[in-house]
Image 1 (cartoon, rainbow over the protein chains, first blue to last red):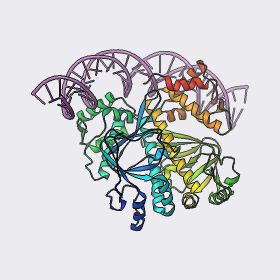
Image 2 (cartoon, protein in one colour; image 1 turned 90 degrees about the horizontal axis):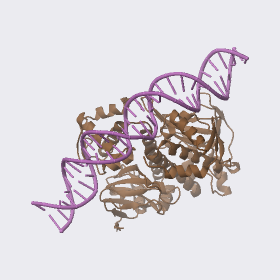
Image 3 (cartoon, protein in one colour; image 1 turned 30 degrees about the vertical axis):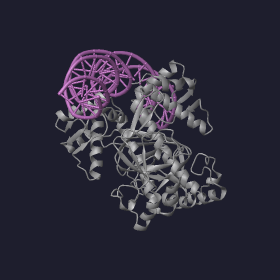
Length: 241
Length: 241
DNA sequence: CGGGCACGTTGACGTGGATCAAACAGACGG
DNA sequence: CCGTCTGTTTGATCCACGTCAACGTGCCCG
């Protein structure tokens, strides 16, 4: 497994993602405690696993840079992408419940994560209430996100799903200081399809349709959203299935 | 809102669900602290809301008796059932992230919940590490459950979905000391359909098919599973979609 | 610079489940 | 005991998306 382990100390107090991540809202002295807790950074090469389903759970990971997907797979080979994660987001929460991970986390580009030992996190969050609260919010946010995805998978048609996906990406890039109209997708059509409960051909057709209708311009993985309000309308006003 | 509030003290230490619920694994002195934290019980009549999407978040709820569904709804009226909850399970975790609930919780039969103020829970879990850890596990378990549901909604065909649903119900009834072969469904075909991303007619047809094939016997909401291994096989070996 | 390869696009066709419709069963109140 | 209402079953038809197949395109590596 070509994973490089860098024994760099991490400094949450210096991290430009601290407003998005666990340190949000902590005071300076609290941040220093957090700096001690976060052990090391770890570099994950493109297409390698941060962890695999079944791995013993040791800690959670804050993405410092890069892009990940998580997926689960059934014995019969079918699999489902359960999420795409970008800088500032937390990976590994699935492992707490059974002490083993229940999904795979794979880097979609060369990435770097901060390793947060779980025992230490629980220990520190007994002392720092703001950290405790942030962590609870992070978990809750994941639950709410999952409900949104269930809604998408359970009730939306193909074009709505893709519109929701694009708007979600756009919004998350924007929150990180990138353009909300123009971005580069790190995942294949097949991965998008798996995430949205569609086949890759359907995803491709929906991209083409959106381009023909003037909502976006697509060139391979490069997306430019031309009409954000238009996509939003698609989401709400399409005929129910 | 016809909700009865009973100002009974609750005693986790006496509750027969403590092995399934937050108190799991706590020592006697710790249980006494928990008894103090859990404020009141609240009775929820069938078809009334425990909380609604948008309500300010105050605490979480442990189901003492009864049966609930949670659902989310879109502006255009489409809705999706995100889960069915039974005794010993925790409701309200969705509210932590934004301080407002993001889904509706509705009792499907007359029910009773223990109200756990969230500030108190955070406070006590700073002192009682076993409680802290249990709570984290409960949240993580919800995330893992959601991933399973995404898998179901994203990759399974109608009969697989229903088989998965029935096996899940069966397993949860069994964990509560009820029969795993025979039980009463509290929800309508439409609610099952919404949960599974299917229309009620499809659910009904799948029930009939399972009955014809000798897997189950159905009489309205009363289900008797005849061939559990058979249903399991259906889940794993059906042709991919 | 050219050949292979993964990924993406597009078309033709098939089908699982949605939709529409009608009839039925149990629950309840008068 | 009957009428009404809500939930369920079943049949006939339709269509969105899956499937299968062919072809394009950018990219890496020799």
